[in-house]
Image (cartoon, rainbow, N blue to C red; front, side, top):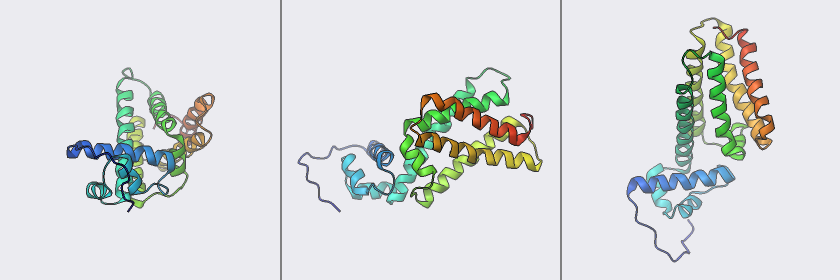
Length: 203
């Protein structure tokens, strides 16, 4: 544990505010450097807290990372729900999927380096992988509700496979720096993947 070398006292914050400050600091550091290169000491220093306090709130570095990721995924889900709610009545399933993709790409573009690294297999704790998969299952369930209740095997493979395609396509886009002139190509590829897998937009 590195000793504090600054001379300014830590600010006294209530528990909720301190927890958010730690999460915000961790989010910035993990986004910039990835999970493996950031220590609890680094996060504590950036949040003007002690490492012991970080462990008290999150239990471990893995727990902290998972909390950061879970909050990010929840933000994306909320933005996707808001985007869907803003669509006109009786909108097509294709348009709903496109709107969801637009939100997802916005999320990727906000931190492309960290997003590409974690999605393409860089170091990540098991708890975080489980949280990511749970969020993917939620997105898949939402997609099924938009498409209808198809029970045939092709429908199941199409919907589940589409989720993986989207993540990988977005990771490649992030690796390329999220170029704006390629954004529509990513969306078209994802929509084409789902349409081709289903054979039609009707379930």
